[in-house]
Length: 124
Image (cartoon, rainbow, N blue to C red; front, side, top):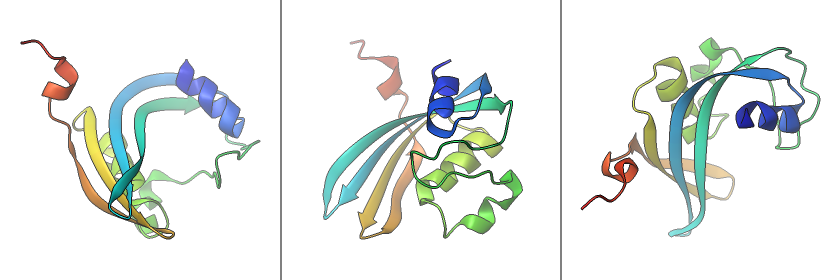
């Protein structure tokens, strides 16, 4: 329900929740230091409409999944891998990501399945 509510708020699209695909712990590095940490929850939704009514989070648009690879230079590298690894061919449910930003350029330093120990809790 939270994912459907979020897409309604951000883009004005009404949708239904279908599946939880997993999470990505993403660290954004600038000048050698972590400046932001994002915990991204990836969900599959079924859109009841495709008209974008809001774009409060920047440029928003519909893109056919078969065009994703052709957009390699246009989208943030970790976003491309999230789509490929968690949407097109679901693999690990959790990933660790380090993204380095320099000016307006983003370079992916790491995108790998998260260690299971991080998600099992600390039972000792």
